[in-house]
Image 1 (cartoon, rainbow, N blue to C red):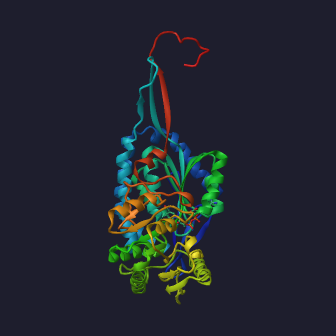
Image 2 (image 1 turned 135 degrees about the vertical axis):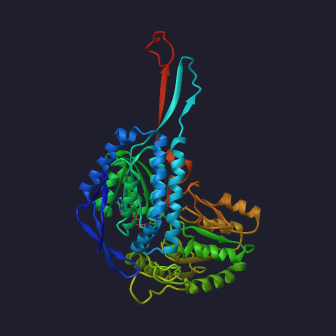
Image 3 (image 1 turned 180 degrees about the vertical axis):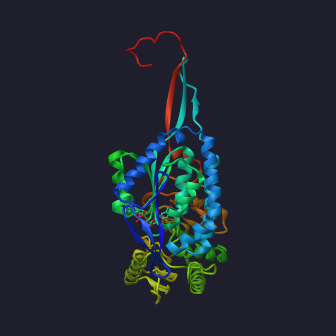
Length: 488
Ligand code: NAD
């Protein structure tokens, strides 16, 4: 079996032991991952803390940090085929998506490389004639970046890029499910030439690794992507040290189709929104809200597409839907579908566990017209399962769209410009895609409201999130300080 190590303080590390990683396409173990427990977490955080203050990193100019990030971007691009193959092997995500996504991850590092020396302070027109006051933007400190299994290189880049541009140091925790691509990424970081301790990459289990990292007193900011329940643990852990948090959580995103929409486009976008990445996408458009006049037509088109999808081994370029990452995830999805059918949802297609090895699950559509509160409408499934609800008016569409505790993404399909604008205003979500879906860029902020979390990744604001403002007061007068008992 292949073996992967931790990366702590510039060294590859065997950890406290090793755990098996399963190939989701076969269900069989294929690699051993070094495991971080309390001692390794502590070593990694202390290394990051030392590196934060050491001249080798703290003394670099912002431009020099940018150059290191640019080198990392080039190396990620060169290593993209290997990293993609490992992500596909260890998480089951299809090679068609991992190879395109990881090549694009390099663009995130380039974007933040360019930003490193554009994180500017400010000079203030202060209301005291004998004072100069300016603001310095300084890195916040050690960042704990904790990611889930899906899109680990991408979800790491949106944390590492801005945090390193700002001058922070990092302990990145890969998910215990499918950590291979991030542990291999450590070799790329090493080759890029960051000083030891600036980037540390570990993996381990939630309670024995993630929780210890989140609670570590030397961590200043926890950048977390994952589920809302884990996010609550993170926030509780952050309370002790009053560390900052940014939380990118799940969603139950509405995909709204009006009867004037281009149905070819809407159908393809909906397929991309829910069946791509086998539905394991935080922005999955998992609730199709469709105007009653085109409901039957949309359902017929989607059923035909869902049944024609090529389900096969994830490492084939022709595969469209691969396995889910874990058996636990597959069984959970099957359970929610059964409960939804019992609550009155009608199975249009899919829903049955296929025979054979691996954690496969077929594209599934549930017509929830008679069960608008079925579990599949309310809960995030994180799988290829679409719940469909009809609506009559724009107001109905908005009411249904916003009838969720989440607020990450949304899609609107209409040819009416004025209606599109009304929907954009009315939808409560961090992203609105109009006549498109599942598009991302380093230039555009990404994040949500409510149970979808807070904070934004991507864009300029993300880098500012990893800084703290220092206000500097400098007196320009040589006269003695006046009355010391009066505040100036
Ligand atoms: P999860 O919350 O179970 O795990 C995420 C990470 O947190 C893992 O590395 C895990 O080991 C760690 N963890 C677990 N318990 C912890 C604890 N007590 N303290 C600290 N860390 C702990 O998430 P998951 O099930 O692996 O991933 C799926 C979830 O991620 C879904 O809800 C999905 O929507 C969400 N997600 C969100 C985005 C986004 O950008 N908004 C992107 C991808 C995935």
